[in-house]
Amino acid sequence: MIPAHMTVLILVFTIEVTATVVGQLLVKHAMEGSRTVGFTHPRILKLFAGGVGALTISFFLTIALLQHFDLSVFYPIQGSTVVIITLAAVIFLRERLTPQLLIGALLISAGIVLVSLS
Amino acid sequence: MDRARQRSANPWLVLVFEVVFVTASETLLKVGASKTARVAGWEWTGLLALGSIWIWCAIGLIVLSFLCWIYVLRYIPLSIAFPLSNVVHVLIPLNCWIFLGEHISPQRWCGIAIVILGLAMVAKPVAKIEEQL
Image 1 (tube, rainbow over the protein chains, first blue to last red):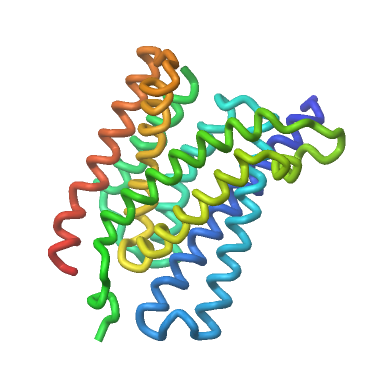
Image 2: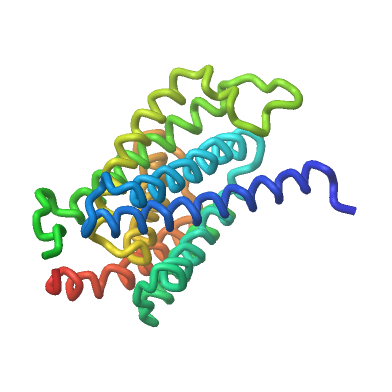
């Protein structure tokens, strides 16, 4: 059986990672749009506010995780966000994915895991 | 006409500032988070950390880094800027090694080398993108 604190840990990590990915995508989308219609366009402001909201949630959850969980657990999952955000940007924002970019992102994630486990 | 051409600061330089601010704030966050007390039932929100001056310094740096970050995102694709921003995972251990005298194990040095290799692979096509801008 999974201990209760593990369930909380997994839940908080999941929300933290999801909030980070969604926040980064929304902010990027807003800034991309601001280049053509300007930053004060209502649609851009809504996207930006949503992104900042999501990143704020992820920020406080990061503090919570730093307070209560071992860094060796926290950082490998932080590392995985590199690959997740790169792929999410390709899927949702139609950015270009090259084999080199994918391998580079995977190496960065792998390196972060190795740094945090030692 | 794309407003991107009207930029006043080099987004790659701003990315460097962003990374420096994040490195400093992460260090302060760790100091502040370690010092704040635990109250049963509320610790998971992280809100109690607001009682620490270090946390407020860290928040200030995070605001600065975020301003840099949104400027970066205006010009650089997220799929390139985000992996590159992870150079903080090289800078933070080096920061601890140089300034705090912390020990870095051989395995950790390998991890740092792999991150640098990954960063180089992501950054290599950047020269081509910059030519197109």
